[in-house]
Every structure is written in structure tokens, then in C-alpha cells.
Image 1 (spheres, one colour):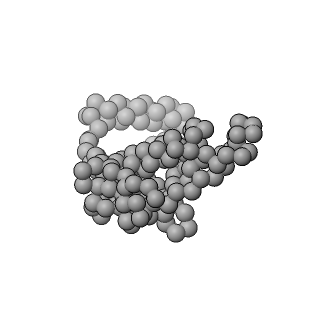
Image 2: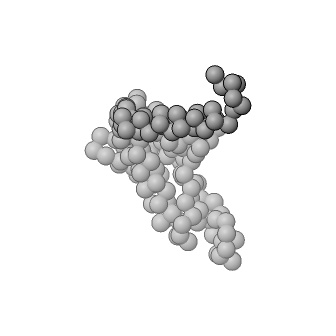
Image 3: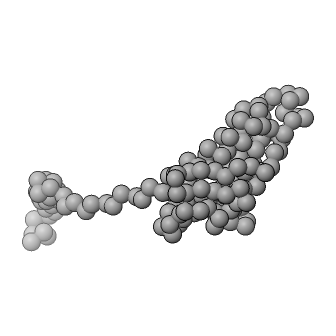
Length: 143
């Protein structure tokens, strides 16, 4: 079948986790599109990806949630070129990029307080607005 996808030194996708299917591409192309199956459909069993820590596996599942089939496999298609071999390489590169993206932990959000000047501006605006509304009231009502 096909070779393993090497993502990093420690993370790889074994050939047993990959299923490749060639299907007819959509779109323009005339006779070539009608008779040659150049579009590649690559399915990856996410549980079989080697070297992933649990957090990265969860991130990968989140990143790929719209590309999962009924069995929970990642489905990546490529019809970028009119060549089946190049489309297979493109699909494999996309899978590797997705796994690489899942390896990067998200940055922690640092909570920051609003500047004192912003709070002052907000309160000044509120006071001004209250004063305008107070002036609109009939005498004796707003007390």
C-alpha cells in the first residue's frame, strides 16, 4: 500500500491507519475528468496515529471535527492537479499539516484589567448621559 506519513521525529501515521481511494474529480476538464479517477480520498484512523499525547489527540479531533466520517476517521480529499500521484502527495501533506497544527498547544490567555483612564471615561460618559436625562424630566419628578 502506501508509506507511513512522518509528521515529526516522534509522531508518525502508520500505513495500516491509511486508506486511499481514487475517485473521479468534479469540475471542468472534459473527457479527462469523465474517464480518469484523479481525485484522491485519504482516510486516516486517528486512534492509530503514533506518538501523540492525549491533549494533542483531543486538539486533532477538534481541528478535524468537520472532516470526520461516521467511523470517526479523518477524510482528506485532493483534486488540485490532474495527476493522481501528485494529488496523493497533496492529501498526505494536508494530513501531516493538520497533525502538526494539533501538536502546538494553544497560548494561555492572560487576563488584563482595563486601564484606569478607560474606566474614568466610561463613568464620565454615564454621568453626562444621566445629567441630560435629568434635565429632560419635569421639575420635581427627578428628585
